[in-house]
Image (cartoon, rainbow, N blue to C red; front, side, top):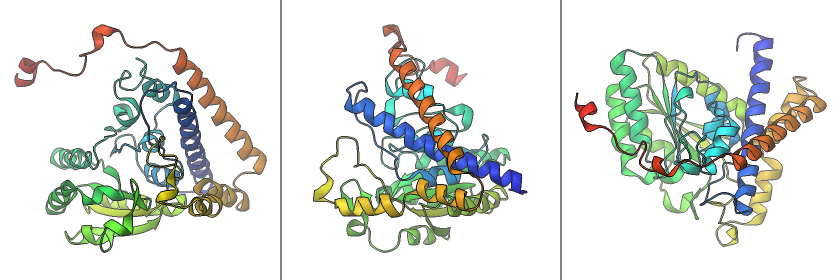
Length: 331
């Protein structure tokens, strides 16, 4: 961020992206509650500063892998409302022609290698992408997003070992929202999460995942270092999910209190915090921010209407993109 104008543009872009994520999730939840969306979905609301702060430091040539709670990563990396809502509703204009649904959205045009419903399932993909970059002499960086629960997966330790040995340009971004599904993280994870990476000689960092500026500052530095061959890196981002593990998880009192939820929403909300900072610093006025919020909501509403009216894939497409021509692969 070289000058004040550049800074202002970046700040407003980050705020807008955070609002876009929150608005997308609000609409996705309503689609589920109104029985217009098949299956379940996992809300990213409350964690917006993580995806936005990191993806603001990336280019379209950089890559990310995502998780089952991946809408925020998709939006932050450049995905459009219309195609995302079409994907959630199983329509052919979705990013994966409606076959991926909520948990498997990919957007190759913006370097999003896809979300993965398998816990930790994208770790190998991200590390493989970083290996490809190193082997080809490219300067792109890959960020692997995953939750704190995924640190219990053996795959993480296998890929961190490889990444450390081969100095791969990959950043492992652990979104620690305090709960592994329905269990407090500190009840099932001994020691510090960052120590898991440090055991492999990987530099590890902790950051307030509700502070988009802190996240972006750290991400910008690590991405620049990874481009120069100084990776890999590991970041634990302390954050919080406002909804349950999924949209059907509505009776959460048995594993976390309403008071805890309200405290995070009232005192640590990433959008409210950043909005207050923007106004205090004179970056934008309250009226300008309200206008931006209204524009995003209107965009989302129009995209929902479009997706509802869009057509489903034809029946003959059922095996499209499922199988490949083995002769072509072996040629």
